[in-house]
Structure formats: structure tokens, C-alpha cells
Amino acid sequence: MEWAIIIETVIKAVIVLSVVAGMAAFATFIERKVLAYMQRRLGPMNVGPHGVLQLAADGIKLFTKEDIIPQHAVKPIFKIAPVIAPACAFTAMAAVPFFPEFTVFGYTVTPIISDINVGILFVMGVASAGMYAPLLAGMSSTNKWALLGAARTVIQLLSFEVVSGLSLLAPIMMIGSLSLIDINDYQIGGFTSWLVWKQPLAFLLFVIAGFAETNRTPFDLIEYEAEIVSGYATDYSGMRWGLFFVGEYANMITVSFLVSIMFLGGYNPLWIIPGAIMILIKISAFIFLFLWVRAAWPHVRPDQLMWLCWKVLMPLALINILITGIVLI
Amino acid sequence: MFEVIAFYTFSILTIIMFGIVVLSKNALYAMSALAGGMIFIAGFFFLLGAEFLGVVQIVVYSGAVMALYAFGMMFFDTTRDVKENIHYKKVLYSLFIASAILIVIIMSAPIYSANIEAFYPAVIDGVGNIQMVGLILFTKYLIPFELAAVMLLVSMISGILLVSKRMEMNLTEEDHYEEKGEII
Image 1 (cartoon, each protein chain N blue to C red):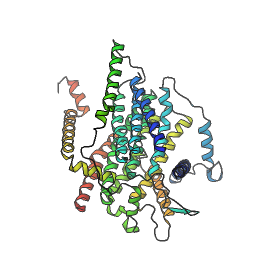
Image 2: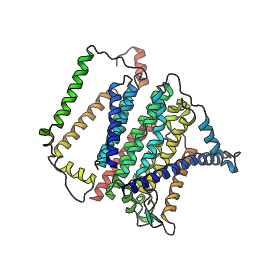
Image 3: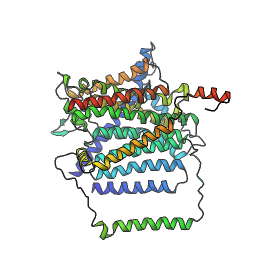
Image 4: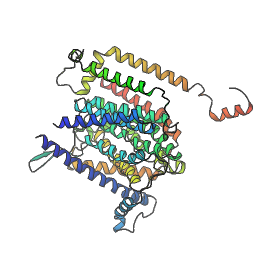
């Protein structure tokens, strides 16, 4: 029995790893296409039909490119740092329920690797440990742009962790559980029972914090090329550089799942659409929102970012908790 | 069996990590190893069924405390080895090892270890991990909890005061005054 559980967990982990890594790679292609159409360009067109095979070309390029390590870098740390980003992003997915339960050949499969009762806290905590990737990369590169990028990373991620944590507190107070499955089941009553109608402010705050934690535009200051070249990734090349971005896109997918499950009804079926399709639609819409914002909005300055975080978003999150508490009593 | 494998894996990794922290002369190695060790300690909490404490260990120690250490380290050159200024190496090392062995012996001595028991054991059935922590924290350990909160508030206010002495001046104005030779 014990071995059966271990084998099942390993199979699930391999499936999640390969599917999400594939989705992350495909998201880079989608990003280029969406940005291109929004800017009245065509984007990648030459490799395969509408440039779909550009993905394979990019992959081959990344894998075969020479792996350059600067002479004065601290080599072991410099080599380990890129691995931390995807490792943390994929570990965080261990507690995310992806789909509703289904039965294959009379065997009930729960598409979650480990249902721990502090699910959402685990996802947020492990994803936040991913900040070590840019941090150690910046500190070991011995390059001033990389160091500045690392400093911005720490400030930005630590500050917005406060906002995302506080904004999630209000819905969790209503649900009374930290398990993502319980959170999903709380919204089982259809469209009107979605938490976004009861907690619109928390939804907005969490989405903004999600943009900052996955360092997407308008908050991608930690690798803003006009100011600090490429931030922490300045000295990296080839697959080590690619690993950072696998981690970033995997984090985008995790944040999309979290938002869908917390606020948008999760994998509950809606009308005639089954739950699995429903959550895929929500995830795709949210990824599209990430790209849309990138095409539409400019960057903010670092001081504007801090002002937004500590003087606008955090007080709003606290007020939201206070109001929720008063209503619940 | 699975738990035994996990326990020994985490113990060996933790000991190696903290060994690097103590023995390495490079600040960057020590810092990264400390962060790694903190995460491996969370593994023990998960093994013991205290998921909440495990996650808090990751969030607080690895997420916040170590990141602030790292932020402090950015003001130094962490890539070079630190030259330690130790005169009596033998005395120092033997004292360290002796005190470590002494603590292990005291803690594992049958007189002491048999008598360790929780003052307020939390045995409430049908209540989850977090609810249990909350119940204990707000009933039996309320006063220490509130005292810790007050201490944190005091340190926060003093921190803000230390930083914000000259907040009403901005940097460009300051330069302007210094050019004129006035003391602010």
C-alpha cells in the first residue's frame, strides 16, 4: 500500500513537471505572438506554420549555446542559482489541485500531489523562497547591474508578499480553512457563489501582488533593461539563463491557478461546461491578461512601486480584513 | 520506512549545510548554506505532522530573515574569503567541541530526557493543525504572545524613529544647504 502511494506520487510529479514545463515553454511563444498582434506586427512567422516551431528552434539554441561563467564569479553559487527558480516554482505546485477528481479504469485519481491542510500557505511560502534564485545570481555574479537587480528583487518580493498575504487573509477568514480543496468546495454553488463577488478588493490586491511577485510588466523592475541592463541575469547565457525564465513562467501558471481557485470558482463546473475545461479557460484568460497588461502599460519607477505597495495596497488590505472581521462577527 | 529514509536524508543534509555555515570562510557560501539548512529543517516539521510550523519555518526564516541578511550582505564584498583573527585555535576549537558534547549529553541523559513533557499538551480531537495553534496561543499562552507583540511594536517604532529623523528634508535640499555651508 505504501509503495502504491509512492509510485502514484512519483507519476503525478513527473506529469505535472513535464506538462507545466511544456506550458511554460509554449507561453513564451504565445507571449511573442500576442505582443506582436497588439503592436500590429506578425511576430515569429518563418519557422513552421505561423512560427509554431520557433519554440523548438529556441529550445535547441538555448541547450546548445556555450555556458559562459565569468572569471571572478563565485562559481558554485553562480551555477546553483538558476536551478533554484524552477525548483521552487515546481515544488509550490505540489499543493495545488489542478482538476476535479476523476476515475480511470475504476481507480479514483485526485489530481493533487499532496493535500496538506495548509495548502495555500505552502504554495505562497515555497514560491517566495524562489527569490533566492535572482538574489544569489546577483550576488555571485560580481557585476554591479546584477547586484542592483538582486537588491530590487529582495525589496519588491518581500514587500509584495505582505500585500498578497494580507489580501488572502480576508477570504480565508470567511472560508475557515487553508486547504485549496476546501476553498474550491466553498464556491461550489455556481457563478454567484464565486468569492470575487464577496471579496472584490482582495481579488484586485492579490492580482496586483501576483503581477509584482512574478515580476511582470508594469512591475518588472528587477530586470528592466533601460536602467540595469538585464538585472540579475546580465551575466547568464544559454540554458542557465533559460532556467530563470522557465521558473518565471511556471510561477505565472501557479499564480493563475491560485487566483482561479481562490476567487473565480476553481474547478467547479459551470452550466454545461465541465470543471476541468472551466479551470483551463480561467487560466488561459489570466495568462492573456498578463500579456495584455505587458503590451498596454509602461513600467513604474522603483519609488512609485514602494509607494504603491506600502501606502496604498497594504492599508487597503488591512481595511479589507477589518471590514470582513466586523461583518463576520 | 519511508519516514526513516526521509528523516535520515534531512538530518544529513541539515548537518552538512550548517557545517558549511560554520566552516566556510566565504560569506556568500555561509549565507546560501544557512538558507538551505533552514529549508531542510522545515522537512522535520512536515515529518512530525506539524505542517503549519513547517510552512512558517520556510516563510519566516528562509523567506524573510535570510533575505534581510542577504540584503545586509550586499554592502560588503562577499566574493572574497574573510580573514579570521583567531590567536588560540586549539583552545577555541576544544572549548566549542566540549560544550557541544556536554549539551548533547545533558539533553540525552535518562534523568532529564525521561522527564521532558509538555506543560500544556494540545489534545483536542477533530481540530486541524492551525486551529490547535490558535487555540493554545490565545488561551494558555496569551500573555507571552501579547508581550511578544508589544516588544515587536516597540522595536518597530524605534526603527522608524531612527530612520526618519530627517525625513522632512529631501536629498536635493540637503545638497543645496551643504553648498551654502550651513549646518542642518
